[in-house]
Image 1 (tube, rainbow, N blue to C red):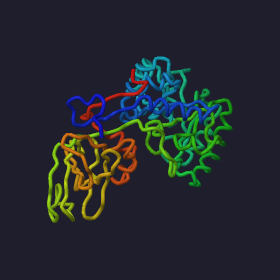
Image 2 (image 1 turned 180 degrees about the vertical axis):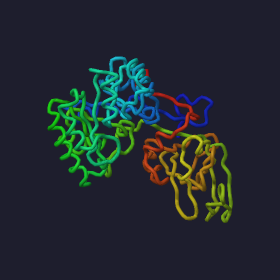
Image 3 (image 1 turned 60 degrees about the vertical axis):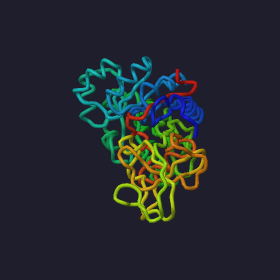
Image 4 (image 1 turned 120 degrees about the vertical axis):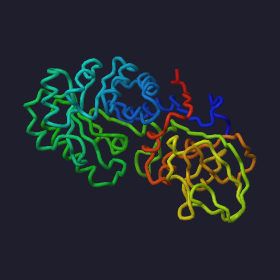
Length: 365
């Protein structure tokens, strides 16, 4: 592939298309209307950087953001001074200063946190989360119903879908019914249920506010539904091309024996960069592939800390110093993740800071 823009003297480049990020949000906002569309930017905006992700989202029209922790909320506030910022992990009394200083809103999940918020921040807005079937954070339905009428009206009532990536899963309809039940007890409070997959379950799931996360960043959000525009592309240079004979092995543990004479490319990327070790191949399993000018090239052997080997035997016109796409528009991140036994979320959020990050797109400024 061609040299990534802004690569300079780097050997590994993560290109982040902020224009694609903004376009993905606009697409989801149009699809979700008349519900308002927020943006989930927790985990450092799914690994691409809060400081870079929030401005194009804000400029595209997003005015509500969700983070996991107060420290993330502080960073969003610096990039979006007028935004509404919800903290999904709730509220602890020792977080009071951060919530007050940066104007954050907790998503309250327990009776204790509700009482503490009312005591320490009387009259300030807060969301309440009800668990409708995920058994993660959130009030049980009975506790939420008992709370109705006794707690000053929350600014948002929300729950989270456990199986929205599988449109046919029966738990989706069950959670919708349960959420409708609890919403009836808070009739004048804005409601939010849909995440990225939930948006595509239909209008019944969208209520007043939707909360897309992974769909914004160009990875898969539902089974059998194509992702939106690619936001993150990881490319590595070929440090060496070597010729190895049939019967030799590649990489640590001699995990992959070569069945024929093979041309091997050694790339400047490894698990220290967040490119998962489990993506490698062995005699027992094929592993992931990379891409060169649209042609797939399989990984050979285990992924090392700093290096990854690929099979270039069938590739013409490739030389040392060329660039290979590890994931991006020609090699979907979710396909790489699947080969490593995980999901695109983990691969994207686990990228290290060693790769040179280059921001492109009309929203990059």
